[in-house]
Image 1 (cartoon, rainbow, N blue to C red):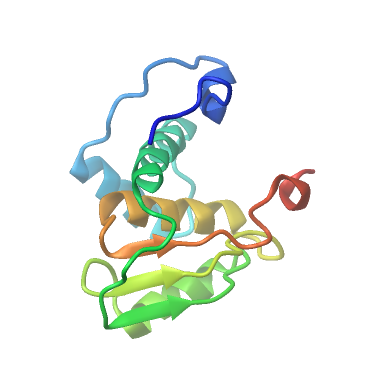
Image 2: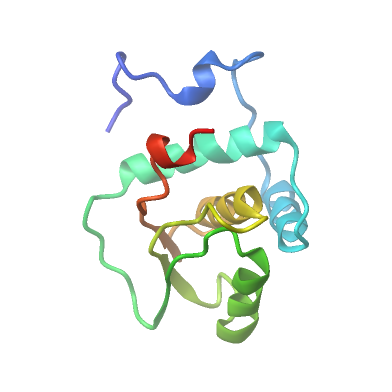
Length: 144
């Protein structure tokens, strides 16, 4: 599926928008490790992740088969430490399949880090992570 010309990607209108270089697997894994520690990654890295995640998600169907066994993760709501504990208990990617049911942001202090981490995991292991959109992933909920 291709992006509609009437609906350009959100980063196209950002200052300094232009071609976003592709991250190497080592860079991507470094970003994931940084996010696991609760630290933010550079804005340019987030833009790269968003671009690649958009490409991956546009290619996925609306209904997908998920291989079992799978760990189903409910609302994260920015609770990074709970998310990390979940990975410690169930295993990390690529050793475990995950379906995230949405609601990555709001309430918790680490909303940006949680959302960025699950997107980075999807980009790194697209056939091991599935992301659904919750009601908190809408313009009305996330607008400040």
